[in-house]
Length: 209
Image (cartoon, rainbow, N blue to C red):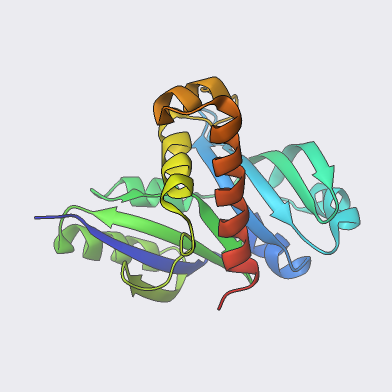
């Protein structure tokens, strides 16, 4: 039996992502999240907002954020590493037999998760667990339009390979050369495919059809 894959929209009102998304009209591409031994939630995310000048001040005032570092910032966009103290949807999900397929995108206060379950019973258990900790805005089958719509085969392969080998992890576990070797192309070609894939994923959430 093939695993079931669904997209689930979650309003996690206690999460700082929800507050930032609604407070600064931000779209957040959560590249990587990890629960540290001290129970802090370590995350690496790209934040797109028309109020980019207010971002650092806003983060500094959020009670959940214990520390943050802006890795880079441009016009309307920033890459940010955060250390936060709050419950994690990821923890609840991993207690079931389900896994999430990244990246997670937060827009209009809704976290868009893509979950893979080995069987319907496991999926039902995961949904029941999520409902105890957050408001579920929608559940869509894998046949519904998603953030990967419009990607070419090469772009989709580059994005999947980058996630698999840890290219998006912080600290980064793989280089552009590693990604190129995985794809069998030159480093410049690998990075080009990846950047175009990232751009398309963001565009699909910023300007859905």
